Image 1: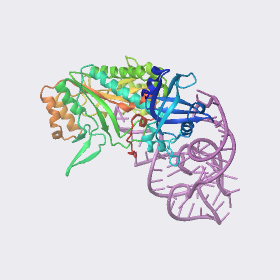
Image 2 (image 1 turned 180 degrees about the horizontal axis):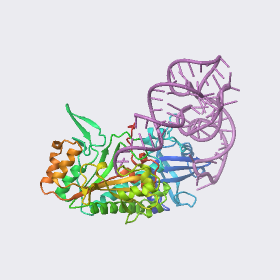
Image 3 (image 1 turned 30 degrees about the vertical axis):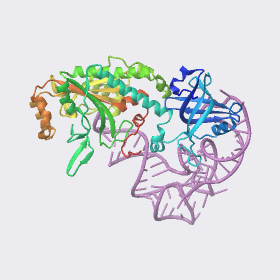
Image 4 (image 1 turned 60 degrees about the vertical axis):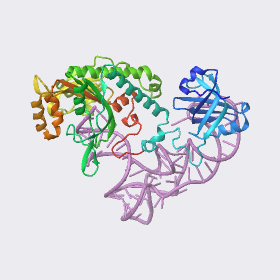
Length: 436
RNA sequence: UCCUCGGUAGCUCAACGGUAGAGCAUUCGGCUGUUAACCGAAGGGUUGUAGGUUCGAAUCCUACCCGGGGAGCCA
């Protein structure tokens, strides 16, 4: 007769019952004739209690000398215990060891301090730690929340290609890929142009996938491969885009607070900083932002883009994200619709997260007039023939439209309060790091 | 790419130009309520690489390699 297999996350439902838990030895403390194996199963961690007097000699000896990350199935009785983290313990009755990690080659990540280089080299094992599993669960919640938000509002998921024939914006550096014998293609840096075509077919669409930037950035906010969600709406203006972005951020923060309290607790995240993220977000124009920054001692002048210190300065007096719109057209991509009152301004908006997490959303209203779009392509030295299909969208029933992109890892980093974005994706790809 | 800091035991770090050390991990021993358990003992080193200065270099100098932080650019 075997006891029912349960997950540690559900252990409270089995108080007083005899159950089996399959997992790995997280840590072990012992004191002569009693030992406390900490078992983790991917859903949580529970302290087991093995008392020598109550067990066969061989089983106790096996357990007390078990090595870190050995795999095993433990059967025992669940007991509420105030002294234990999590509130429950398992009194061991029997155990089956699947693999005992040998002392000659012990698990490298001991429960002590480690440097980031060592941890990144062992990322495939580092993922087993309490903090990393918490981050990955928050990431899962954020992704699910993003999809629910759009799905519930009638958006259709239409994914865009990862191999692309040319730059979408012409500015950022692209990764080249040899495509069979004699063709060069590039890894996508945005699905936006395809999104625009899809929006003209389905009205409201979004794409969600990996994005690649070959910029040699070495900062806590950059990856060369990151995930981005990009919604696009037909018959929409800048204000519609801003409302959609604000709603998305509020919804996703709410879902994390609702469903991932335990993980935020592990991460020691100050949840008050997230609870204050409610609509409406403060809104300001680029003009106003430059004036505010000048008053705070920034060296920015009109026409320049914000650096990270500028973004932090802008948000520091608010308890929620800040929306900045109407940037100079010169520092924005070719497809931005100009402001009808000042054609030097682009109808773009950035959402800047508080606490120094920087720009999490960038987007705006696109040009719908074919002649203006053609002129902008030429001004940006882009070959019009490469954009023939894109121009078709303006020839056959053009309408005002817009959308934005949100970086998933930056959002997750903000939710988790992590120092660096690299912990917010399972296997980060960065400048000088592509392994494991 | 530029600026800046660093590379010493499996890991985290010490060591004035003068005998390379500690904690953790590993091994052995002790402990019936431990919370990164604790106590005692043992093993473990071509000080990133290559040159140079010096009676003597982990330490000073040069070049290179690797990594951290930041800038620019971006999500």
